[in-house]
Amino acid sequence: VYSLALRVLGNPNDAEEVTQDVFERVWRHAPSFDSERGRFGTWLLSMTHHVAIDNVRKRQRRPQTVHGETAEYAVATMPDTRMD
Image 1 (cartoon, rainbow, N blue to C red):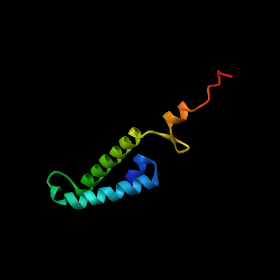
Image 2 (cartoon, helix red, strand yellow; image 1 turned 135 degrees about the vertical axis):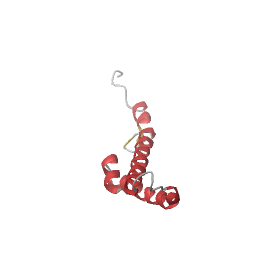
Image 3 (spheres, rainbow, N blue to C red; image 1 turned 30 degrees about the vertical axis):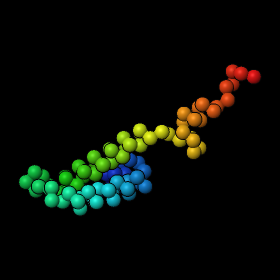
Image 4 (cartoon, helix red, strand yellow; image 1 turned 180 degrees about the horizontal axis):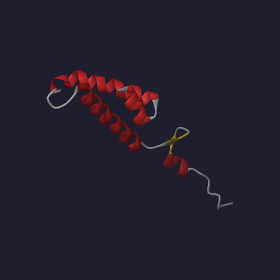
């Protein structure tokens, strides 16, 4: 689970969070697992993939920061080099 999350996210801290989230979901949704529909490992890694991709999408929606400021603020407060 951790290895797949790390491969998708590229960040060990985010991968740890996803791993914890996945195992919590497995605990809560264990009764929904149906061995006739597939193997447990496939179900677990599929859940990991979905949670990791959701994390990537969430990160993309968040405003990017530059030295603790949002990118929009950093651009708005940059000096205009065309003016004296």
